Amino acid sequence: MSSLEKRLHLNKLPPMPPSGIGGGLSKRPMMRKKDYSPVTWDKYFDNKEDVKVSEREIFRLYSCGDAGPVLFFLHGGGFSALSWALLSSVLSGLIRCRCAAVDLRGHGDTRTADDKDLSIGTLSSDVGNIIKAKYGEDPPPIMLIGHSMGGAIAIHTAEKQLIPSLIGLSVIDVVEGTALDALNSMQSFLRSRPSLFNSLEHAIEWSVRSGQIRNLESARVSMGGQVTRVNPGEDVSSLNMETTVHSTPTNNTISEEEEEEGESSKSNSGNTENKNTGATASNEKFTWRINLSKTEKYWEGWFSKLSSLFLSCEVPKMLLLAGVDRLDKELTIGQMQGKFQMQVLPQCGHAVHEDVPEKVADVIAAFITRHKFAEATDKFHKTFPAC
Image (cartoon, rainbow, N blue to C red; front, side, top):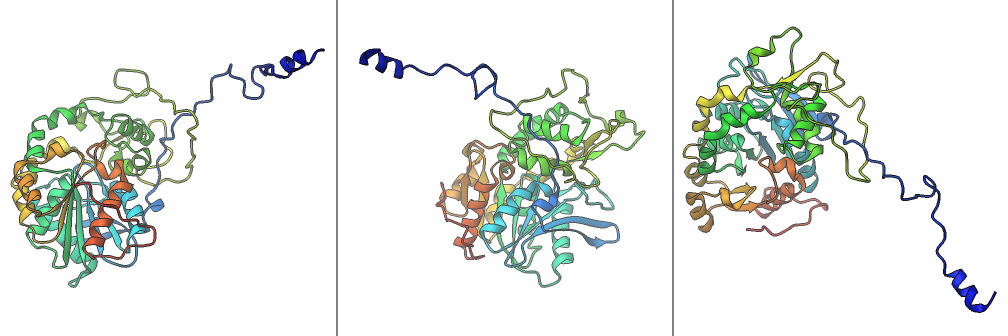
């Protein structure tokens, strides 16, 4: 063999391996289904307790952290305290604080004498009563943080001065003008939601694929607080909902979804709670914990005059939005006058704190340390606000 032939022979590519051996390209890469199994609260919170305001008023509270000011979280309509699980876990690692999230009246595992009274006066009074029952007459420094309806409750609670030790206020994706405009289409949105789910896993999958919660990890812990089991023998037609998710393929079902290549599926067997999580029998169904369509008479009261009330609160305050287009005229003027800090976190859904909990935690931690409400840990690297 000549030297030229030898060089050509050495430069030849090796033959392709047989199919199925050594990573041959003839087979489609393995795809795994996403894990929609529920995750329990104790992965993110340290404690769960029932705060007794009166004999018939008992509020479920989740908390983490043991030092520093209390960041008291108020969820939006239809959500629950578990909506704050990821954010609380991240935030308590960035600053020395205590995080506390409550199931509001009519939501989650809270039980009251009248779960249907969701007037803004009752809801804001609840917050003051819960804090008094939990922390006594001399509560520690408290910052209220609320999302949507919870943001409105936080503003009314602050404006009424129901918390003597209030040091700050943060509201997430709630603006008076935008909220009031959205009420016209709210009933249509609620009717478009499924009324029943075959399992909690199906509810979690729906929340992610519908875009209600864009973070799968958050959905796996928070959806357990939004739904409840249907009692055996209960007439589901009495639920007054429109659509139902069935186990057989229909227009209302959620087809199975495959994961992106390389994404692993993690098992959480045994990591479930007795009421709303865990393996479900084939005949069990889940429905929404609260029928929001029946609370319509309270909606306008939640958001009316909200901008002026927010601006009148004398404590340092911050507004987090999913889009700058949500800002109304009164808040635009107030922001230009420096009356509050504003932060826009685009590419999020309405549940900003669930979609991007790390980013929201960074923003809140920066706000708190800037006002010297709490000290930062060595895990926090301060970022400048975007606006």
